[in-house]
Length: 242
Image (cartoon, rainbow, N blue to C red; front, side):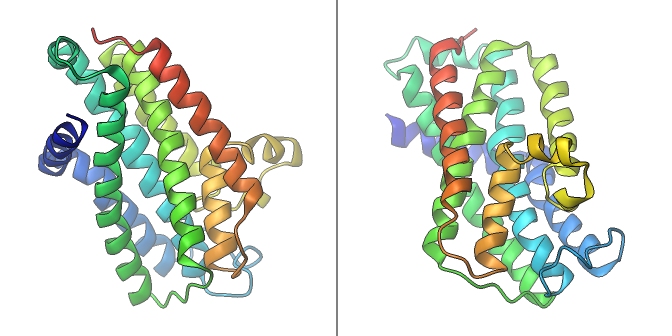
């Protein structure tokens, strides 16, 4: 049942033009724009490499955020409003099974995102380092964290509130999550709070591996794991079918 639902969720996600704009076009444009134009001064944050070496890991984290959190929250919120989830609730598919299927659909979409963004980054002169397994674990942990938070929002708020809230969070985390603006630009008290956000943990962890060639950033992975457990547990507990 979960495999069938995951395949359906994947097809629906890839057919949705607005979702593709959010998950594919916007991250790609940000990578190209900030990588080619000196909009943000990254001279003291690029680790001695080029601009794209700083930007590419952050944009990969943004892609996970856009798909696992923003896109999933909005689509699930409106499925709930239109009664789609109510009908699924009457089927043998359990609540956790629906969440698992949606997360699997997100992972498939992210594979396509990563392939596209890395191709664009290579064209811009990106030279990544580090072990692919560390990158994969960070991306999976980030997906679980954002997926849980997105499903929690979609399963507890009205669809209109989810639409507004998910887009607002996307913009705020784009600016304050270390994606294109280094966290060092923020005052120390603010930075200490931002570092505990899942987007910051994911972007910093990917940057440590892909730019600096570090091993597994266990601290960042632990932050993502805590968010994932808390978000998925809360979504499983409070998600309402209607």
